[in-house]
Length: 156
Image (cartoon, rainbow, N blue to C red; front, side):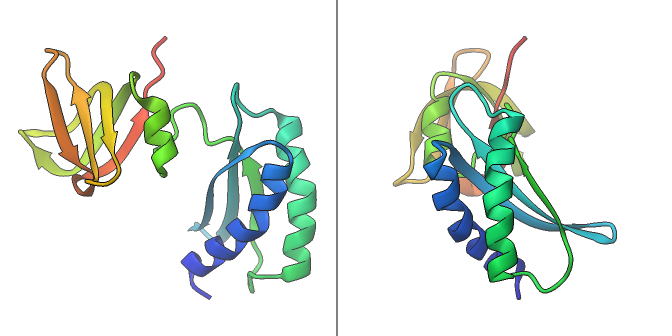
């Protein structure tokens, strides 16, 4: 079974469990690292998740995974927070970050730069673009197709 199919099945199993607990399902990742396969479920909520939140999802989801058994090989199962500087995956991530500092990494150099930092001014899902206000207050618009990663920056 493909990695994409596994993550799709696990996402469908996890979503009702996570949402019933008042949490947000951020991402599901099924990856091989060295000799081991990892199934990671990332959850979040306003104010951040606690260890208790992770345990509250781990138990019932672990039971559901044992019941459905969508993964043929052995794997390590983890439920965790995506972290404060998590990469944006869905439109909600972009919308939530408008007005905040972000870091963008491009697939290839744009205007002589592979990455930029600035304030996310706008997100246009329909046209697949983001607008960033850079250090000199210039607003530039970039295609999401050119962006390999974008995440909110936490300034200390």
